[in-house]
Length: 110
Length: 112
Image 1 (cartoon, rainbow over the protein chains, first blue to last red):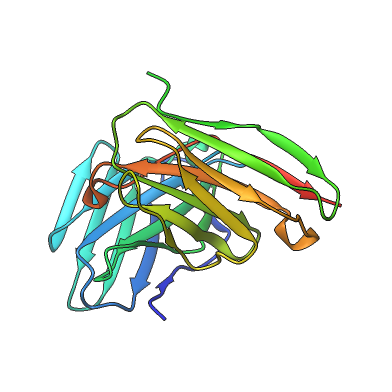
Image 2: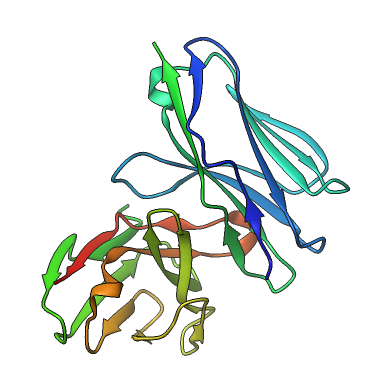
C-alpha cells in the first residue's frame, strides 16, 4: 500500500513565527508533490507544488523536497491567524494517481 | 469562471434510498475524480475518469457507480444508501496530474 504520512497535530504556532509541516511518502517512484490547505467545512485548495529536489518559494510559503529521504515539507513564514487550517500533503505515485495524507491541523495563536 | 460545481451541497437520505451526486467542470479538463472524506480517514478515491468515455475504480468503489456523461460532467450514484456512506463527497478535475486537482465545494451526505 502506497502511503503518505503526516502528523495529525494540532500544531500550535505563535503569530509571526514559522510553521513547519512535514510529510513522508513510501513510493520511491513518486514524481509530483503537492500541498493543499483546507479550512473547516471547505474544500481543499492547492497552495504549492514541487517536482524537483530542493526548495520552492511562493510568497510566505516554501516547499522543500528531499527524494532520497522521501520527505516533503511546507514552511509558512510570518504565520497569520488566517493560516489556521488543515494542510494536506499529496503525492503522485508511479501508478499515476494522487495519494493524499490525512492532514495536519495548524493553529496559529494570536 | 465557476471551476468545479457540485450539487447538491447537503442531502439526507434514508437507508436504502438512491441518489445521484452531480459534478460539472468548465475548465476543459480531461480527468475527473470522486473522493469521500471522513474524520481520521483523509481523502479516499472512489472512482475516477481519466478521459471522456472511461471510468476506473479507486480505493473505495463498493456501493457506488459513476457515469462520465461528457467531458464536463461526472456523476456519482448511490443505488442503495447505507449509513456507512455518510460522508463529505468531493469532485475534482485536472488537466494533467502534475498540476494537481481543482476541487468542488463538496456534498455533505447523511444516511439515516
